[in-house]
Length: 150
Image (cartoon, rainbow, N blue to C red; front, top):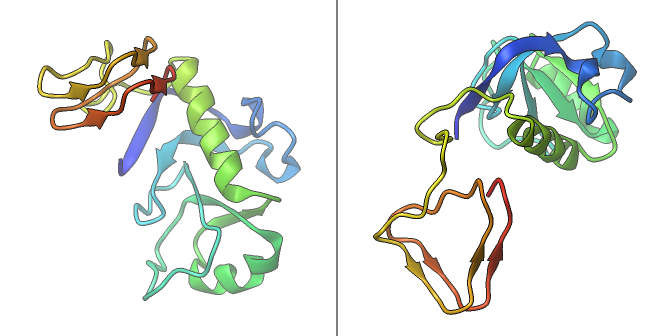
């Protein structure tokens, strides 16, 4: 995944996973993206100092830990940094919410009807819930349960 656009831009504070973050009030979200994709209006996270030289033109909204906010502000001067307790968890919760509420635009990575590829290998007693995409050459061990949205 590099980025996922959402069906309709929305205010970030209208999403249940982000509603408690006062600094997000009025900020428009267009989607979610990796930190390496400097797209204005897209949400991402950074929970450690990145190796190498970051893109100073990064204009995303970045969820960061409080302890790293000052250092990351120097590295990402064009970004909006939002300090939260667990940036990764908040990002994953937001992605999961957007996916389960069908707010993400469909892509080749997120098709309308996720499927199990005929080239995938599934063990015995595997449970695959609806909304799961299993690609070719993937092996799923016996007794595995794969939850919706995976």
